[in-house]
Each structure stands twice: as C-alpha cells, then as structure tokens.
Image (tube, rainbow, N blue to C red):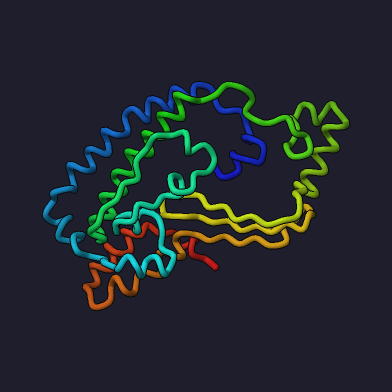
Length: 241
C-alpha cells in the first residue's frame, strides 16, 4: 500500500519468499499479455469500436498538459523515466513504446507494450536487488523498532517527536515528477524549515488528460464517448480539486 514505502526505506521488512513469488509472477505475466493481444488485435468488433476513434491533435494535447500513454500513442516519445531519469531508472534497459495513429486503438497498443516493458524492468530489478538493510539508520527521520521503543528511552523520545512533530526539512522548494501508468504525477513542495510544509501542490495525470475529452467526442457517437474515456484510464479521485 501507499504507506509501505516511507522516508528512509520501508515500513516493514519484506515478507519471506517475496523474491520467489514475484519471480514466478513476472515470468508468467508476458504470456498473459500475449493472450490479450491475440484476442483483441485483429478482432473486427474491437477494431471497429477503436480505430479512428478519440482523435485529438498532438499540439493541443501538449498545450493542455496531457501526458503518459495518450501522448505516446500520438507519436511523442516522452517518458519521465527515460527523458528525465529519477531514482535508479537510469540503470534499467527498457523501451518507450509509441504509435502515431493517436486513437483509442493506438492507446491500447501502447499500453500492451508498456505492460511488457514493465515486466522487463521488474525482472532487472529482481536480478540486481542489492543486499543490506531495508531501512536506513536515521533515528531523527525513521521510526525506531517497536521493541527498542519499549526498552530504550532515547528511541521512545525519537518516536514521540516524529509522530507528533513530523520530519524537519531545510527551507526551500522542489518539484518532482514521476511517471505513473496514466501519465506524469508532479509534486511541488515549499518548506519554511518547519515540520509542516508551507505549500503542497499535486499535479495529477487524470486531471490533465480528462481535459481532452470534449474535442475527442464532439460530433461523435455516444458509444465512441465510452471508448474515448476508457482509453484515458482516468480515476475520478485523481481529478478532484
């Protein structure tokens, strides 16, 4: 869950045999993608409902801040993990799938290939997983172990201060983008040096991508609206302001 990855590492030690379980899944997953492809790629009903549907000019997409598979299906080879690498993505060998048709079918094709590339990344991560601790030794940032908190006064104090005050970061501002399955998620944070952020703003991909719906469906069939919306893969909670 979202609370598992924390500042300094992980909330809990990874479960036993996690490496084996993930390896088994990731070895089998590409064959399932092949099945999806064989079922849909040349299906006449699927192609009738998706080919040429949901078109929007790439220039307008960029003007409105649309990102992710939608712009890659329009021919723009942009993925933050490749274009502006963060974390350890520069170590991984993977491709950025693109299409040029810029319709629902093209977005489907891009996402199929992205599933294969994701499996490729996970496999490389498994093979190169480093040893060592799963959380850093930084008592002012990381919550102490439960047993230490119960037996060591210093650990109890650190636990109390982190829970009640939070983490103190230096004054300044930062904007960080990550590539999600729907597009770019951007976080803008301003710190005044206290334990509470002075300002936080989150730019979500669903909010930007959903802006493109009106020009995609104007003058089209209601059925085309459903296909166009589905090709965006938006989440309503992700658009909430």
